[in-house]
Length: 201
Image (cartoon, rainbow, N blue to C red):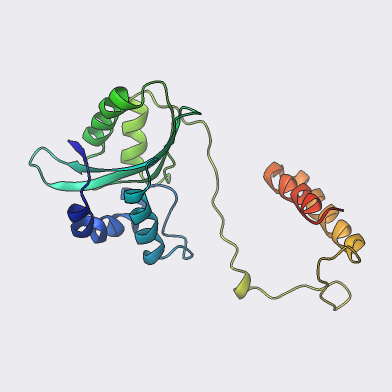
């Protein structure tokens, strides 16, 4: 069973839900297992979900009326679009997905639904596939830990990005783009073009 969470219930269960985010098998994207987003980030994002008119948090209760997770999502009525912020269930995905489907039919009929899941959460993926959801994208998530890397320099100097150093920047981005094209990483190419636009060169 799903029902909208109350403020009192939020305070009672937010720690439990955070624990579910700490296992790939019971969590969804955005992940809180990347070593970047913190418990405080999760609490803040979830608390915002309680206060915003375009976000909803639903508690999931199993057949014994015991809370076994929650579903937090935002929606854009003008776009008929809905995306989950957290879909964390402790072992009852078939029932939770079925209940979520029924909830959506009542309040979000004809919406496009986007749910991100780690591939380790096989129970959730199986449950959604059984409910006629389609996998439309598979992505490798990589984390760059800049503070652990050794900087590489051009001519042993660091350059600030300014209009005066635009030739160096263009040379660097050109090399990045050649690498990205070789690896077929179109999103990185978009990022490179975005850098050009951002500084107006």
